[in-house]
Length: 244
Image (cartoon, rainbow, N blue to C red; front, side):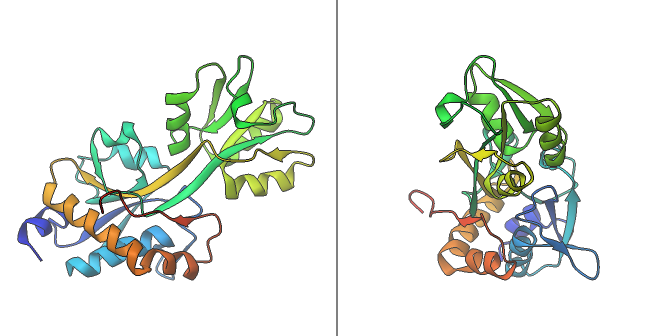
């Protein structure tokens, strides 16, 4: 392994992997030692194995907090959704997995399609600083975003305040729909959250290594095997990067 790659991705001799505990599809449990388990911790461990160093997980309750910590020497790689706002400071790989994001509407709603959501007077409940919130912030023109600090909080506010729409990841919205009789999940998706691996900008050798690793992990079946091992529904292997 190139000394330059190791100095950028494991400067302490350990790969410190920032993990977003808020994504229930990517972190599905805890080991006996208390470490996070799931698809994203599994990817981090595979990277550490390739580098020939141990892995240490650096957990964050929310993706925004993980992103904020770039450049603070808290983590060497971060496993979160790749969004343009985050990419200003974080160099990302292509996605290794995708999660559809769509909308839930309450019983009796006249909203039938995704296109009908972005209208004046429509209030969209959303989890603040999630990857799909960042997408909505860039793309919603007429509706109003109503942010909560957690996925559960967004659902509770949607119900308590009688909001018109709840934005979320399709697997979670399926659970929410079961808890809210008569509610409907709209067909299609407004975006697919691109789960990727990032490192601080300037780590050019490191990000080149990570990008190659992710493409290999998709092509070899590693990502698919992690999804199957952790019995995750609603998470898909991302397509190969263009030109990769």
